[in-house]
Length: 364
Image 1 (cartoon, helix red, strand yellow):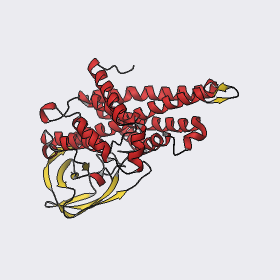
Image 2: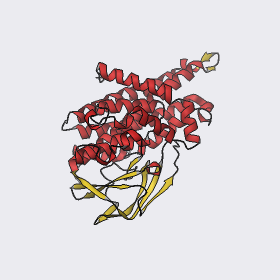
Image 3: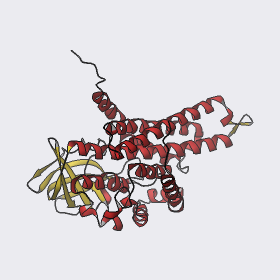
Image 4: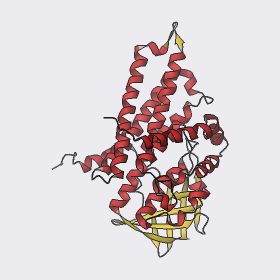
């Protein structure tokens, strides 16, 4: 059954889509990516109040829950928005502070100013697996964390450290003594990553949260990547359908060929399944369902792979034009590929699902 949105949620989606249409065109994204000006989008996000999505209005945020946040990231995916800072802030940093302090705490001012915040966890792992690469010696942190999302643009760092079943959350300025960020330029030029090296950096311990709370935060962050992948897939299908209706071979549009119709239908099935999975998981997390984290794992695994399958078919069905730098498809293709790994690859989540459901056979 397809997830049904309330009138308010549909109005929110329409407002976000209209804002992206005004502020984040394909030409804008190309310029920002080619000229390394992703901070232009960061300024738009701050001006629009997007950094506070999902945070209660009483705490300086824009309100809404994970369903609204997923709607936002789906729309961001449709335009390949440079969403690294938004993911760091709205999907990781603020939920961590909510669980630890009950509010935005030291990041309150960043909601309006657009100050970059990076959560020092490796982008290639589920967020609740990457907290052992840094150690605390008193109030000084030591360690190296590779591929931290949006680290090169960050002015503040949140560092979650795992100690047994408890996570300690630390905070420091990104320019503090003992902090070094080495930018890493990956295939997706619409995102910033960097390796964070901590060498006796002085940090402030904010508090702690248990493993169950960290798992919910991590599941929500992975789910937002899934929502963005869903938006990518929707836009790729629209682009492909438009192209095959116009491209003519043997005197007829290639979209009339049975093989092309089958490929498009398979993509649509993937998208509809991903839609239901993403929004059911968001609803389940919002309502504290017992199996909500499991649903988020399923959604991340399926939606990110569905986006890659869609990107592969879109590239094939576009023919030679799909491979050109001047055509915008490559931005979607690269984002789909990077989202596959961001906050954990599908294989890792399938292993978790199998363990949780006791699907693996006993070797004895």
